[in-house]
Length: 292
Ligand code: ADP
Ligand code: MG
Image (cartoon, rainbow, N blue to C red):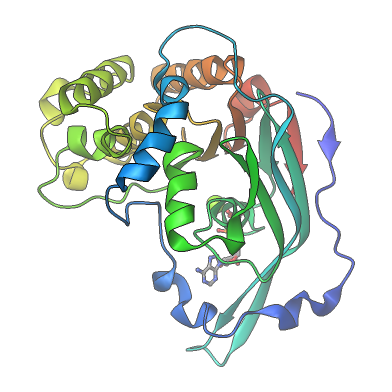
């Protein structure tokens, strides 16, 4: 692992006043977790999708990436939470955080619990709305500013460009682990049997017992849910992957599988941002650190 980068400019105390009206009113429950919303795309979008399709579904060990250089640029992010039901208390969390990530590198977010790592990562997936700053993402060869996209544009960026392993899997009763994990592939128009094949392969790699594949993950252990979440996000070759503590509930053998998945993806040119509670994992897969 390389240089430690000072990501924070705590230059201005003003972050405190920056909470956006209406946004934080929703509080913790109101924020969205992961991109399951939205339906299938229209014919036009499908045509555009096909251009990136091969790369997104590439299983080969090819190291050729359609992108080189920077693919993600977060600049001067500010984010506060206002607790409207608790006397309007304002919690400034991000105060001028910047980060540029290049294809093929993994940047670790490191810092004490509560320092804003997950908030930053959720902002990079537009789950949280930032108060100030820009998040430029290279999407299908064009730069887009994530916080300023219309909802349908954001869905496309999530479908084709950014994958996200959230800390907790969002599960729905009666939807099987296979279906939960295959959803991103299906959204790309992959035939169900091909999508399920790919997920079965990933589940096998991740040692998820076969008896669980057709059950809803609602009753799964933390580590089992985590592996469904990992299979879901790694099933597509996203150019950018965000990993929020993907190995926190895994045993050593499965941690090793995840580290290999991360290394393979990096070699293919995927740009990653990761929060890893485990020092050994961070040391091995990350190229540099953004300190919180
Ligand atoms: P980390 O991932 O570094 O442990 P978080 O980003 O989860 O930290 O949290 C940073 C701070 O922001 C904490 O004080 C936390 O309580 C607060 N916070 C995070 N999400 C919300 C939310 N949705 N509403 C209110 N406060 C939040
Ligand atoms: Mg966190």
